[in-house]
Length: 287
Ligand SMILES: C[S@@+](CC[C@H](N)C(=O)[O-])C[C@H]1O[C@@H](n2cnc3c(N)ncnc32)[C@H](O)[C@@H]1O
Image (cartoon, rainbow, N blue to C red; front, side, top):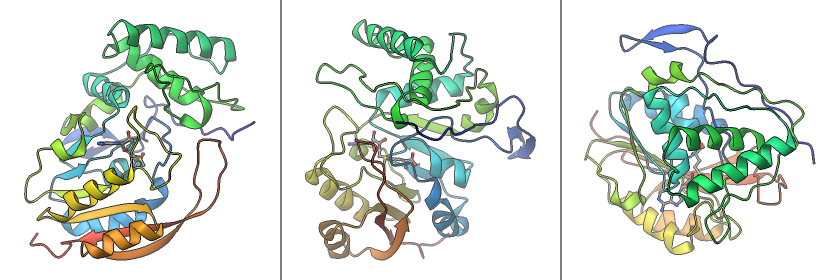
């Protein structure tokens, strides 16, 4: 299986622009690949966000941060239940540089996967080494998947890309993350403020998806939708437009708009177009 290579620019060579008084590279991209990443959705969310851009952005299911990087909020609260992705972002905030060997090589991949799993077993999953290994495994593994076995060990196979560009020096990301608060918890435990603008992208409503050890059940979909429906500020919610999701969001009073997702990556790597729903609430809330 060959997946197309995705080149990412070096953070060191990115152009710099003045944003909120700080030196922030103008073309920094999300550093991770993420299953269910919503880069394609950014233009649709951007028009909804612009009138509210002075608010804090909250992403309860931030994953690969495609939307946050698209909106570039001054203030953000970014959460995901996945401890490894959050550990990586915490290290970006501290100024990460990676010194371990990185190459698109199958033997090296399995050696690094083994080392990453040893660190997890030793309770060292929150260190800079684990963050560097996580980045390498994410870029080099199959489809950027983040999957663990029943013992909690990372088990994604080698990705077989034709070419991969790795970043070693992430210090350019530091200024960007400076005003972005990071937390790793279940979405319902997020300390929301009334004025927050929420963009929520829960795992798709499909049975084969398991992002965390616990997976995300139908009960999770209902819990997330009800939690979002209680928020006083603006809410934008995206999901796959299955019949029961549409029924759920309509029953809670969301306004619905349908979009054609360019592709959906499932766990076998099959890519099939999917209908997406964009559900919104309180977008007219006072600015
Ligand atoms: C569809 S992905 C988000 C992708 C992201 N919007 C992007 O563009 O990269 C859904 C995310 O929800 C996270 N997640 C699953 N269950 C969660 C929970 N109970 N609380 C918070 N996050 C959860 C997963 O780890 C996953 O990263």
